[in-house]
Image (cartoon, rainbow, N blue to C red; front, side):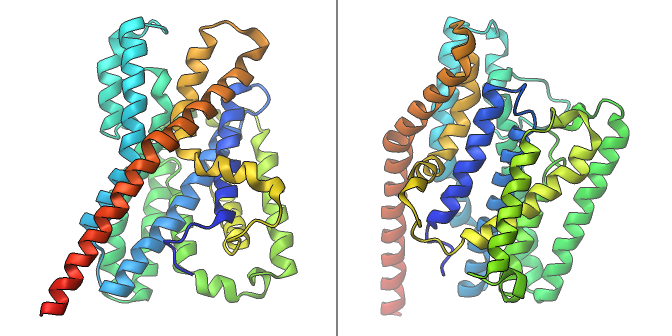
Length: 359
């Protein structure tokens, strides 16, 4: 199965992740751990899928096509992000809804340069504070393709050792930051190394996919895999009801890896769901398809809806507003840009084929 094909089962996982994030932002007193659980799911899934794309390049061309890779990332991520940042600049910069006008230029710069998670460069407005996760992801993908391609030239064994080495380095950096921050562990919540292990776990799972799928417990379609996937889902849901995760060192040491491993089990279970087994799952699939825009818009909607003082309806209103904006983003921003990118890719491939034919 090509990693380029969109798997509907994985959209369910995206839908679950963004639902947990929205629940955490709407009712933090109930879903204390749901936000970071959803983020770790996104990280592990991203590591799995992006590594699949990189491995496809290495298999077909013997190299990673860095220009194409980063251009595709830009086409996928930047348009929707720019729209959200522009909305933030207008609403906070002109209307000053949250009284944070002075922070607008710096916050916009942090958001657009993917540096919201870098300590020591100044805090931005909390309205866009959630963009630290995008920064963590993009910084990881500046390093990971280079490391993967370089190590693969020396063989798969070396690539696996390099992956283990990177995981070890991230864990050492995490441990050092926790020792430094103790007892105020919330200080490291958004650091680049605090949750990056989830992307390593997802990446390692993709590298070992054939071996994992050959394991009797994880064999596609097996009863044991269904059972493990059910346990993984239960673990994810249970951890979502934990108290606020950022204040406990165990959250960083155990919660991140546990959720990432649970996500890998869910991926292996859902990977072959090119069609959904029930129409009842369609709302989750749709939610997964707009999950990126929903993530971008959710915290701003929480902030701006709260300004309306709707009381007990704030949470519901923020989720509805998020879904409206995410759907609009999908139809009017993301889909047109993706169609443009597809046309550009087709023209590039046709030109390359013409050159090969003439040669």
